[in-house]
Structures are given as structure tokens and as C-alpha cells.
Image 1: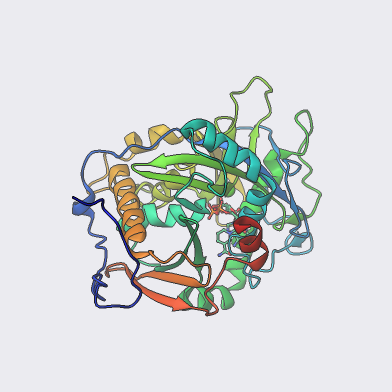
Image 2 (image 1 turned 30 degrees about the horizontal axis):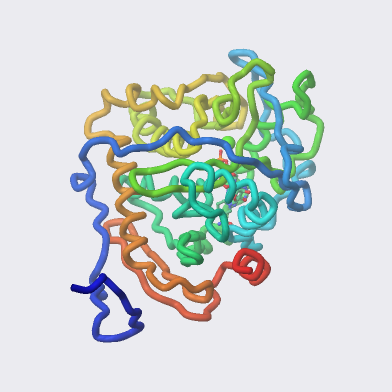
Length: 384
Ligand code: 0WD
Ligand code: CA
């Protein structure tokens, strides 16, 4: 004879998620039907300049210039004298995405309201906001044996914001990188310079400076099972043909990799590298990956194109290989797990999810600590 009502209880005996409430990463648990993954739609983009300054436009978008089949690009050329490296000690969290959201808020709220018929006020119409790279790490977790991760999650106005926290191991690795490793990191960016032009009809300028502060990022909206996602990812370049399909279908991912000489190397390439390449490009709907295969001296000996949608076929002959469905189901279950854990809607509370290989995903709760990552300028603007 009554209606259903509710009351809110904080830190009381009603709390029912115990400390041991964790999420397993065992592959077999995720071998079910492929979950719904809606075609990602680009809702905007932004650019970061050589000083890491934000622009709400595509000024950093570059155009792919197809190289010869065996181009002999010298990837060490310009190293280190024409190299400006981003300061990785500066932790930007998801600030650039938040800047994009504030600049495009009316567009987002309106498109959501039109789709649902709901009132546009204060509702971005998404459940998760994060970097694409963080989702890539979730997708590959059931197969990862080396590197763990930490993800900070905060709930604000019903939306969960996720931002990575560098693990102690990752920081150690970053601060003790060998000279060889630093040079090899340059190779990937140099390959981009050899294959990209600043204008659709332009030529690559291999005499210029490689500056890793510069970035063009797409912002896409999609849905994984019940989770509405908004994420941003860095895009290397687009097809220079103006007739190419609209974004993200015109985008290309550029990669470099060691040339493959033995069956063992081919198998490792399929098992480990193609998993990461597939996960990263599948998420935002980037259809093609251009791979430059280089020798030990950093000379590109061949260039191959991989269709993202065909990668899972390519690896099927590998014994006990990775499966896209396991990646996507694990990600979907992690997002459900996060939604059930992250209950308190408060920008000063961080739920820190941690995972180490051969362990389960666990979490801890932090109030007013250095883990807080939603800046005041964002919280005050979005909540008023
Ligand atoms: O500070 C951090 N912990 C992170 C910062 C973690 C992840 C991303 N970022 C920033 C990057 O600086 C970049 O601006 O986010 C942006 C890219 O986001 P994303 O697309 O979600 O990241 P991801 O998919 O991991 O990487 C895409 C590309 C990389 O290409 P390759 O082919 O190597 O996967 O973004 C670049 C890189 O070119 N990138 C970075 N560039 C400079 N510093 C970094 C980085 N830390 N991480 C990725
Ligand atoms: Ca790349």
C-alpha cells in the first residue's frame, strides 16, 4: 500500500561490498558471445601544439603519403638533435578531454537530449569518460603477463571518469630507460614524419623536428553492452583523399616493428603485438594500420597494411591465441564492476582499481588525496 522510496547511508552496517570483492581476469570466464559494441561515432576532435597547448580543432591532423613498398627510411636520422620529447613527468590526467567537454558541452547535451527526449541540463548522456589508451589496457588484461595497471575512478553527476595512475614499476622503467630504448622510442615518431604531410596535397618533411608534444585526438562516442562511453584517442593521420569516408573510417594508425625473419618471431608478433594493435584501433573504429618493419639499425625494410577487422582471422592459426571476445567481455565486466563499486558521487573521492599479472582486480577508496584528478575548474563549471 506504499510506493518504493529510498534513503542514503554512508559507512554504515548496510555496506555490503566486502574487501575481497574483486574481479577475476581468468580468460575462460570471458569466452562467451561477443558483446554489443556500437559503431564508434566521432563527436569532435582537438589538437595539442608543440607546447602542449589545447585547441578545439583539427589543426594537428596530418595526411598519409603512401611510401614505396621497401622505402629504406632511416629512423635514427635526426636523433637526438632534431627531437623534442614531451615531458612525461608532467601528469595531465584527463584534463585535455575535460577541456574538450567544456568547449563542446552544449553540443553533447543537446545531441543526448535529442536521442533520449530527456532534459539536457547537467547530463552528458555517457556513463564513462576516459582515454582510449586506458580502455586498450583493459581489453588486453586477460592476456597480459608483464605490466599491471592502476585506474583512478571518480563519479560526478552520474558519470564515471577514469584516469590512469602510473605504477611504481612503470615509473621505475621510465626513469631508468636505456639509451638504446630511448632511441627506439624515437623510431616510431620518425616513421610518422616520413609518411605524413601537414596538408592534403603536401609532402612529408623529413628534415623537420620530431616533437612528441604535438597531437591530434579524436573524441568518439559508442556503447559497450550497457555502458555508454565517451573517449578520446590520438590519431596519427588520415587518408589524404577528400573522397575517403568520414571519420573515424578515414583514419590510419602508424606502427613500427622489428622485421620478421623466423617462425618464432612471426608467432610472437601475432600473439603479443597484433593483440595490442588490434585493441587500440578497434576501440575508436580506425580501420587500417600501416606497419613499417625495420631492421636492428632502424632502417625500414618493408611496409604492410593491416585491416583492423581482419586481424582476428590472421591469428587464428596460432595455438592458444588471444580472442577479441575475451577482451571485450572482460572490459564490459570491468565497467560493470566499477559501476557497482563507485557509488559515491563526489569529485573528491577516488576509487583506485589496481591489477598485477596473475592477480585479480581489487580496489581501495581515497578521500581528499593526491589521487583526486578532477580539477576545480572542471567541477565548478560542469556542476553550476
Ligand atoms: O600520462 C599518461 N599516463 C598518459 C597520457 C597515458 C595515455 C595517454 N596519454 C596521453 C598522450 O600523451 C597522448 O596525448 O594521451 C594521448 C593519447 O591518448 P591515447 O590515444 O588514449 O593513448 P594510446 O592509445 O596509449 O597511445 C596512442 C599514441 C601512441 O601511439 P603508439 O603507436 O605508440 O601506440 O599516443 C602517443 C603515442 O604516439 N602516446 C604518447 N605520446 C607521448 N607521451 C604517450 C605519452 N605518454 N602515450 C601515448
Ligand atoms: Ca602510432
